[in-house]
Image (cartoon, rainbow, N blue to C red; front, side):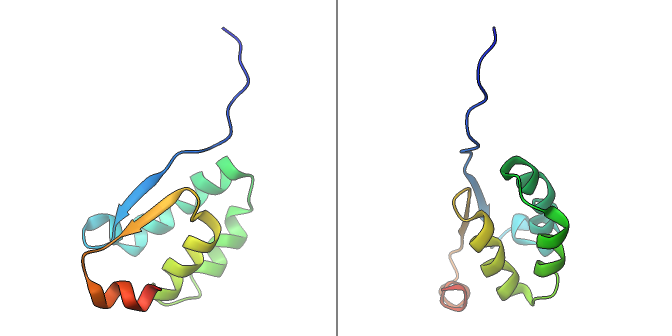
Length: 82
């Protein structure tokens, strides 16, 4: 079968309270997501590693927020990320 590849529409859920909330896990998603979306992974990685954890999450959300959902049960963490 030959078909057109559909637009990338996967939704990834990341529980910030668990091991997926680790900065290394999140940064590990930059390259594959950038490739799928046609973005410059090196530039995004460099931009995101210049931040602290909270700003990294916000920057990641800026670029990949249509495809990645961050979740937490911690109201203080949630407030810092809004």
